[in-house]
Length: 149
Image (cartoon, rainbow, N blue to C red; front, side, top):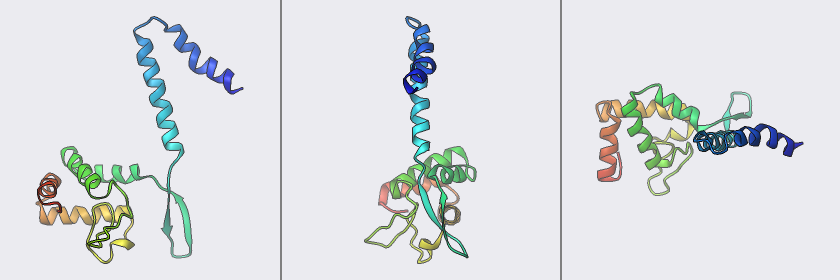
């Protein structure tokens, strides 16, 4: 059954494009679509504390990135993304063993381990507003120069 599906759904349309300049583009799009589908089929889970019990709920870091994206300008988001990659590679539970810093942006607060990914974003937006005049790019520049922000 799977071979028939592959043959009729994926290969036949590509065969019609044989020799066409569009064939490469169609093949590329097919590969990208399959890669995206495979990536999102392996969504991670994060334990979310509830007042009643621990519940496993679907979680994907792209939702957190989108949350930040909707709170800042595009140019600032690019710097914020670079900063998050530099600090923790977008790991919500990253811990710096030397300093005790925690989370996506490596907060120094003793309360940081209790914050959700979204709370981490909100707290860091407040920090950037206060320390870097609401400029994620200034924070990134400082981090690149001194190794912290």
